[in-house]
Length: 233
Ligand SMILES: [Zn+2]
Image 1: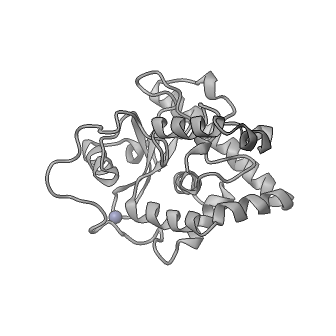
Image 2: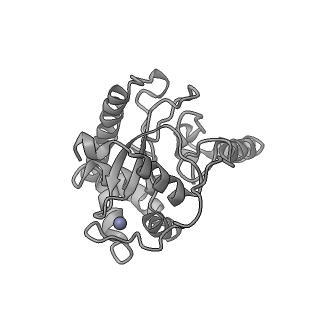
Image 3: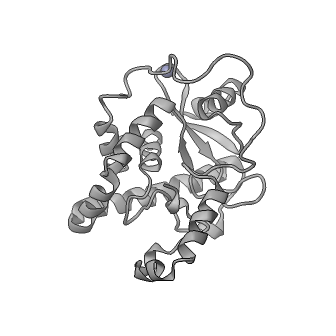
């Protein structure tokens, strides 16, 4: 999309908050649009207005796509993909390329939005990239924003939701509440990562740390990291 299409209008921001059921903050661009023009993906600055680094640049907002991707996750697709990454070097290489592309896109978005680079999250992308699949919503959001051929597993997930959503059609009618006032107060008090609010992530971490035997059984690379939303499922 060109810059005019990426720039969020007041109407876009209202649609986003209706899609998500909460006000949006720190959205600097629209990452992808429906054929009708409605937002599919919100692009968030790599540093929030409150100063917090934010690695998840692309947030899937369209309820039809979000629900379809959740069905894939519930069916165990993330585990299956992670296993394939471990034994398919070609796929693993392409997925590493997606990770690099994500970082590059975030760098460009930081520059365009005036936020600049965010050293706290340098090298940290999202969704489990580059070695695992931890959130399919993140990968699909990336694929929709970047276009086909950049994120192989996001592209594959899009193919696998084709019975519920395809790029060439509008699925907006009835997909979110268009009556009344848009949500104007952020009841969660925090900007959510894809799926979980920070306090929910913190609760998950605390629960994990309270079980040292299970934490010790995890590989070192799987330690919870406050700058990475990879726990967000
Ligand atoms: Zn539409």
